[in-house]
Image 1 (cartoon, rainbow, N blue to C red):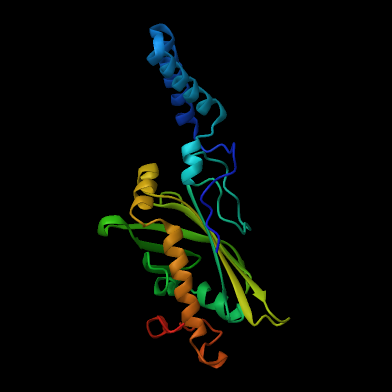
Image 2: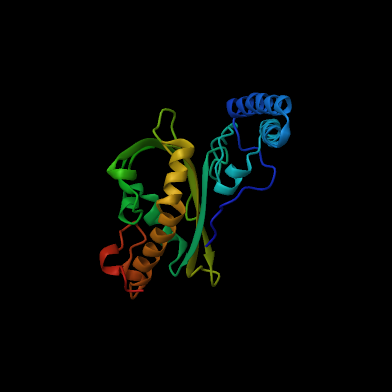
Length: 254
């Protein structure tokens, strides 16, 4: 499984406001340091120059290290198969499940099933072409958002994005790739998520410090889903028409 923890070197990961503040603050600090002189003044001037460079290039090395991105860009439109790369935190996880794609896709496509194995979700309510998501946040709080499916290829891919006004700005996609024989007796499931946590950068830092970052959750959730499917002794025990595996009984059996 792959976790995308760093962005490519030089990637613009700061929004316009942050860049302007970084340039202005850096210039002020560099000027003060130059006027003061001495060792401390030189250090201040160098630090100020670093902030100016940070704002001019739009790349913050700390953001790159943490996988944080506040820069915005036009969202991908309908038909997209990938998570929105303009958001703040990226998660990329994958796992292979020994079940055909139509079974795994069918289970996932019924969005109301997702809280059965995605531990951070409390419920998903589907109405027409939209869905309402309720997630468990830090300190026992809940966060909600509305989403729409932007791409849906049967047995292959599901992609979605949150709607304007949601508490959590996010998008995601799940790819189902057959592996094994020509029929595909197993499925490689790849989950891509992009999101900006409610508390912004501070929320991302808190999550990483206290082990609540999505990559850890998604990795464990996919492993639970794998156990649920593979604990069944035959294909007939899991209907291809979106019947839920019994995740409670499957836990710990693989």
